[in-house]
Image (cartoon, rainbow, N blue to C red):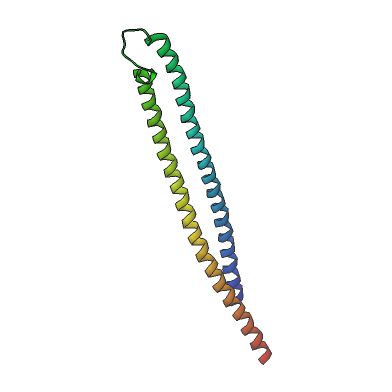
Length: 144
């Protein structure tokens, strides 16, 4: 009876270990996705900057050159500075969200890895107890 209980406990730990391994894999995949989204966000910012520069250079050359405005180049146009500020603020807010998400994923992975280590040590203990019980039963039956 003791062997059956130990074996059942060992099987439940194996089941939980497999669940944890699956969850860790899912979280690691999410971290990879987060890294890709971070790269996409950086590409978005670069593309927005390039488009804005091209647009403001065009506006500057068509509207402000030779006018009464005292702008030296397109970077001094109010629309340019406002749009740059918007892009920077949006990028920083999104990066904060991405960083928080990555931190949460890392914390989940750490917690699950700790639980996995504990389960592995419990499993070794139960395997040892199961082995000892089987040896004792065998030795007891030989003594009869």
